[in-house]
Length: 423
RNA sequence: GGAGGAAUGGCAGAGUGGUCGAAUGCACCGGUCUUGAAAACCGGCGAGGGUCACACCUCCGGGGGUUCGAAUCCCUCUUCCUCCGCCA
Image: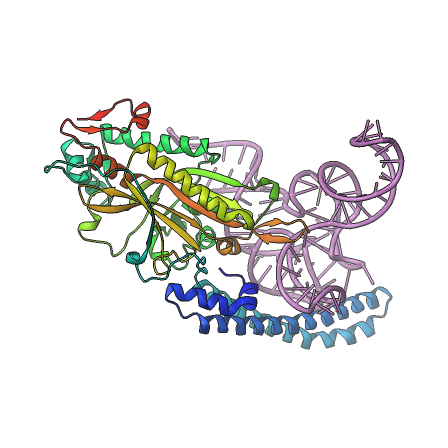
């Protein structure tokens, strides 16, 4: 969430910037400030009440010690009233703080100055494009047909055991999937990210920490009996590693990479665009996460973008990079670059990576801090990106690498797959 | 799953109803000494709210209660340890 201090100091700038999200934030910012003021005044009143009652208690203690029980008892009577008012005040305080928090949770992150205004994905700004789109013969197939033809992914079998959106990978398909995971992890660790394996179920506090809760509650699978959530991305457990910690600034840059399956309910998705591997309830992803000093988070973002570019270049897949517009920007992000691979047989772009700087928005919820030179605690910046999401990369490979002889395997992957063609 | 024990500052660890936000040691930061370092000595050293700055308030795993007063007593939840059972 946004820092109150920032809202106090730069309310108008923030409201102006939030217009890029097509949000008229003036009123909500005002009510946050109003509640903040109320909170502080109630707090002050409560503090004073507690101060006097603390003083009285100490006096009573001393009187008892010196054997003046009668005087002590007289003082005791005075405390009853204080107790009552402090109880009322602390209830009021709770109420106001709760309201304030609810409001703060509703305010999205402030877009970076470079974020273009816009309403939807149509207004995203293409900033880079690379890789040749292969010329496929007339009988080129979309990946779900290829999957069937070569018997490497079985969607129907998944339906039987789980439901739509839970494919079963078979034979060389399964092996290719495993190869991609290993290849991505190798690339990421070579770039300085430490590999880590994290739980795939997280508690409520973690969901709130990274911002999936409360606003995306319906997108996560929830295990009611234990009140745990299946992770929609490794971002959740990995970033929450740092919840409530004060990191040593010498540890910057903090870089992690994790492979996890990701679970998404995708309520409301339907139609031709969700065919095949385009949109799944369970998919694999290798994530990169960074915790950074605020002064260096944008350098970090750039280096993450460059890193992902390097991978796609090696895979020789045609891709483009978009700078997300205000209307398409995630709730908690300040600046996001989406990577899309061209799905030649479907003639459309598929998102395969999303690289974001959350600045202090997540860390404010998570309380990820560090001590600056003056021994003051400051919020760190958090970032993450996919490097990469598997299914659509797989779709891109299947479609772009199809030939009459079969599906060729990108050269860099051959050491991982142990074969160079699927036929 | 059953029985018992425990949870205190970065770590270790004292503290069982009243000047305890908390002894002490280690670690860390600053200083003295030294050519430099170590050692020794002196000083500092948790977080949050609040304030121009103080004052002041809150926090001893989480929540609730008893009391004029709770780290300390009671209830409850969570986690960890030991033993038993089960198990990849």
